[in-house]
Length: 148
Image 1 (cartoon, rainbow, N blue to C red):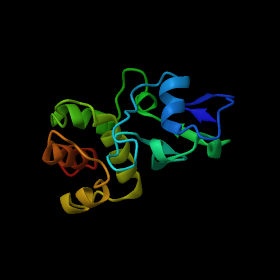
Image 2 (image 1 turned 120 degrees about the vertical axis):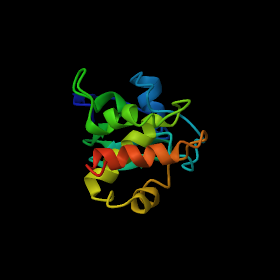
Image 3 (image 1 turned 45 degrees about the vertical axis):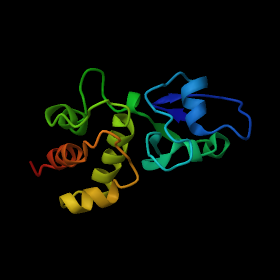
Image 4 (image 1 turned 90 degrees about the horizontal axis):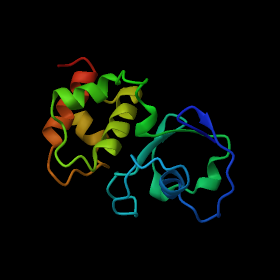
């Protein structure tokens, strides 16, 4: 599989989740383990440009896939517009959910689901922020979409 632009040839147990592969085998710890049941979105990554919950995705199913994690979004020190918007809008508190929120927001923008605050909330509803930074997260997505 291709992870953040780097090709990896891996042998994994058929029960290994993408989340565990990323964190334990590839040492990409930006993707967080929250509920480990697909309910919180902390482990959201992009697979072939689509958001998935890493905890519910079996790694063996991704032969030949392209995976993007939070570590693979920025180009060196050049942040993506959404990453910069998260900083500008102070759209995080503890920061635990931030990687999943940013990956989900990236997909939301690419999918064209940032037409309104209500649409953003709907399409990002699979990502939970225990600190309650939702208004600022929505503002960050709006800013990245050019609405702020």
